[in-house]
Length: 89
Length: 374
Image (cartoon, rainbow over the protein chains, first blue to last red):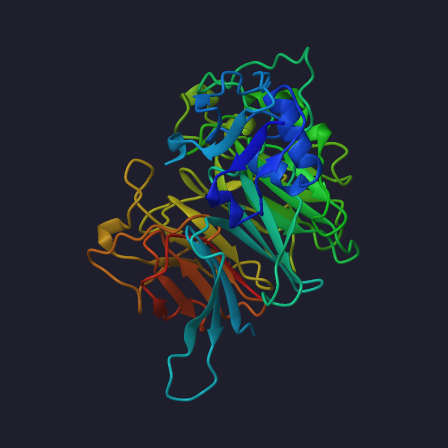
């Protein structure tokens, strides 16, 4: 199962522990996390469900390609890191 | 008489309180909340004394927190969420910047309590121009579609931001179905039926930033802030991008006030709660500079409906003071005697005599977005 890890900076606002979840895309993996932590969804995704402008996701160290649809594939051993983008300062 | 002020700043929300002990400075910063976070607005709901703090985390987006006990405990409540954009929706680009406004909450710019007979009703004005209403103290929100879907909205453009936004919401104390909005840049809008329909109410406003043939177009005006006299709600004041305007007929028409010293440019305005002829402004050199005239911080007051203005300086710094006051950073208390304003350089002043003299509370807060008396 993919492992989803969140930036430490988000923890001050909403606890987001590491989670191993079922899912074959970034979207599916994040949805699985947010199903148990709905508050966190709005901290990571915008109103349309895309990544917030100054958030980013790394997939085994590679930056996500589909910021809107989050359709990038992930494998059972994938590490998904939800990070702040330096574009946000 | 209010003894407490909420101050929303770039790096936290602060409670400023009046000391009753003799020998101490009468006003002091008592407590800080959300330290380090950008608090863009604070609302004190006079119906139940709840306090709402709008935060903009940058990376993590806009959030709303609520306290029902004066700040002892806070709970995060919902923020307005724009509904899914229809796939066939193809709005024209913003006429000034060429961008299409996003269907996404960019900023919770202002909040307002509904009428006395509407417990729990809140209004929220946002960037990029959506008006939202909550009927449960901010736990859920709905976009006002009649305004959002009004094709005249596509003439709006950003003033200071990339997108237009609603910064002023004035609920009529006589009839809460009547709500007046200020939009930068989109003029003044009024509903008389709780948001089911909207009318433009900017007749008489003039925009220097437009070519002459469009200077009086109502839908492109930039009312920086609207203030309404509580006991005479048809009396309204606007600090506009290039002037001071007054209405005495509930926004049906506006009159530009001439010869406003030292400058008619400014963001903030406060209306006396019971005297319809008294209002206060915090002026600056107009848009290309945005600093106090001659480096002197002043408050401008009229007591005669805008026929004349007094420039109040006692207790205020200058020359070489470069404080700018944002649109929500001036407030008047329920008596009309106490005023407070804060600046972009973190200074906060209070007056207990309608502005005749000012006390500096501090020069060391973060940039101040909003001040609100309890």
